[in-house]
Length: 188
Image (cartoon, rainbow, N blue to C red; front, side, top):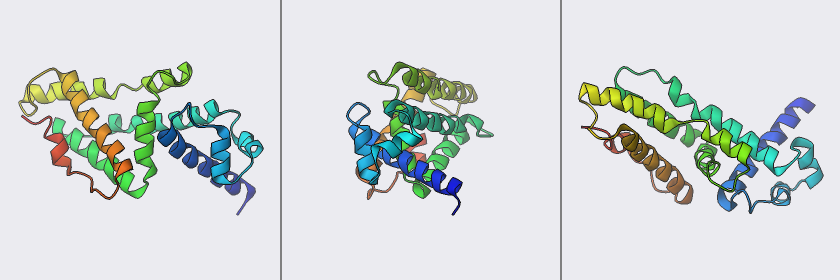
């Protein structure tokens, strides 16, 4: 293994462990020393990769932003197809890489007060509820999505997904729900 590959592997280990700790303990309660200790590395080595806890958290949020933009790139023929493909893609990725659940939760946490403002604003820069509301309006015009405020329906959909992601972190032995159960929130 080359030095570059070793460095990339160590950086990935740091990010995954930090993600786990930030999600379970929260940003303010997680210390750099907690991350270093859990990886059995020195704090100095960790600082070689990230200059601060905030820099590490920001890197995770930037990684999460890339994932949060994926639903906007989904091609679909009908509005409900968009929501079905989104859920199937997210759950499929999370089954293969369980840290995806943690990332989803971290991105929600990063939007809350108490997170450094620059990082919080970064997390708030993606408006999945607004984007999805526009697709819901299309479905309402076509008569396939229930009537009602599109942003509220979008919020109900995404809040259910958020809850499922958080619950699955707590109780992974419970199978993920069927996609249709979640999209039923929107169906007419």
